[in-house]
Length: 288
Image (cartoon, rainbow, N blue to C red; front, side, top):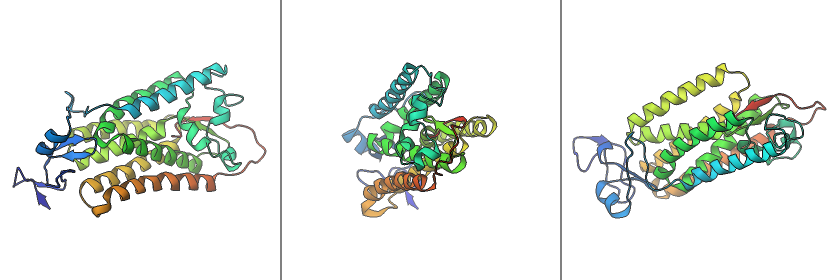
């Protein structure tokens, strides 16, 4: 266990991402490239901590792009006349996640389903959560890592939906990816000693998990799969920041997140059950 270079009596497992000096929570400054010591943060990056304890460094371009894609996709859904609810003859039917279609070669559904929603409230809940979480996480880990976490979680959520849902059920929604962002934010906040943020995220996450298991029509597999993907990504990022991945930390970290996405994608393809002659099943919310 190392000791903070400014507070010799305080143990810490986090080092400055620029100079490598050990830093305690009081000395950490979140930046797009990891935690920095006070000196390095002043030299390299301007970061502001919000009044509520959130991290608001720089911008969150990927967060707004992802929200924009989902909103535009919903407008396209409503333009079909289906309103995002009907699984037959709509964008949900054409691009939502259904095991039999994935098994039939329509692999793109594992991704496109994460940008479709079954109603305005479904869209609103997911986009509000993504907005607040994205503005915390994206500036603190960087846009590239944020996007990698998002899509790794989305695909892990799609895998979970394939595993735990009927092959006839159509699943849509960004919930799996959002659950992954929840999980990654929780792990990273804990790893950086930001217990007040971790506590708030953990409470909200717990409430959402409770709702997942108590409200019908929600994709349990999608939510749990996305959460698992985000937690794994968060662990990789924290391990890199603590110097546990060695001199090739970034390569291992990025490679690990890509591996989570690829393995989820391949497993979902291989486990999707083929067409049996039945029609569309129910519609569930939150594949990824």
